[in-house]
Length: 197
Image (cartoon, rainbow, N blue to C red):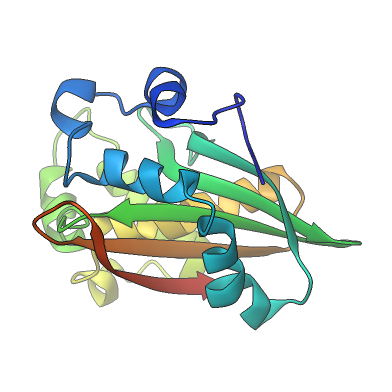
């Protein structure tokens, strides 16, 4: 697996693909740093293959990994999705795009109902973005059905679909990589949940 930007160690990750707010986000027990360590570990690729790719396709090869990939969600101001990592995999003519959201004891932003209320301002695009995403995925304008979903989950899922569309990929996976850490900042448990399209 090749990591874009020829990233081979944690220092190169920090300088080439570190988070926006390095001072507060790049520290032990925070997802940016802990996930970078995981991806750079030689077992990461096998972990993705065993837990995701082999369940939906056979003999896939991960060709490229891009940290902090940006996908355009819409034409409204602020309409972009920052994926913690995107993966491009293929086996012959079958191609798969994977977008990963990594978390260490963090939430997925507010629920849709709260974000909708926050967007009730003249210059806010949140309500338009929510309507657009929900209609695009579920073909309904009934926003109330989704009131209790977390905002970051729907933008992550939609961003994954848009990423696949940009690359003309017909199959994509949105993966939540939840990292649980013990007191010595070693990985205690990893849980992966995914939704494929």
